[in-house]
Image (cartoon, rainbow, N blue to C red; front, side, top):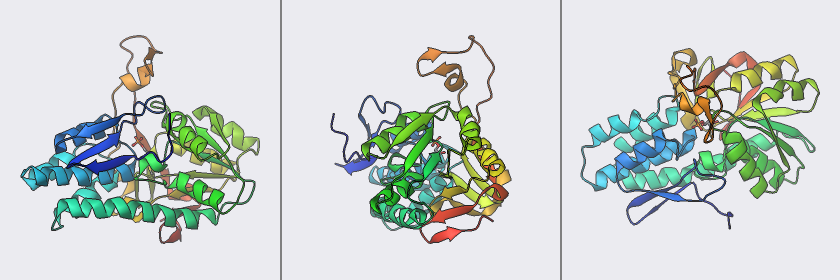
Length: 314
Ligand code: MRU
């Protein structure tokens, strides 16, 4: 299986093709979206996921709506309702709504995403030392964006600068984006990578095995950062053991209007927790808490790596 140059998404023959991330790493299948409803479904079912990728696919959903002559305001409202936490979704839909051509704007955002991530990578690489072991949570990689990634883009850039790094990926229950996607991406880059269960992070830091943590973000607002569930526990452990904790994200993930504590945290299907892949790991009918994200308050964050430089958390 040739997995080099995999694309998270591409536009062809007036359709959007999304790599089905629920099937990775075992199967590489592109999911065809003919209309904006198909894209909404792909976002809800997490065939496409990760804040920047959700944003750009939402922009293409608007382009599909425009091509079909749909009511753009209605389409915008429905697309925005697909997932509540990643602000890139709302940012992208509004940007396209205000543009002359939805498709041209979506194409522009597609190209911009990669440029932005390379800049994030360059700034981020400045905090990485040769020989570092870096912990990441979830997947803030190429698959969460159009390409290159944010947190994993920092690792890619460090490697491009000739630094030797080791990466440890939290598996990231319930859907294991760390195990399935981040490990996969690091292997493709030939960056040495190990997988750890989520609950190992504190132990690894206590043992002095982690030099820095770098994660992505779904939303950065006043008071902190929302990211995949489990990020808070990693940040608390990092504070306790003096491990620098960085967030890498584009400015499109910033929401300066709101307090991070007012942001809606998506609650997902209990089956994601009751099942591990296709194996049930809890009794049938088990009641579940399944928040998809948590909030890392600013005082636990060392710096926010953006395309414009490294910012102090606010
Ligand atoms: O539920 P997901 O897989 O969409 O969650 C993704 C994350 O939490 C990522 O860390 C975040 O979107 C940043 S992606 C560059």
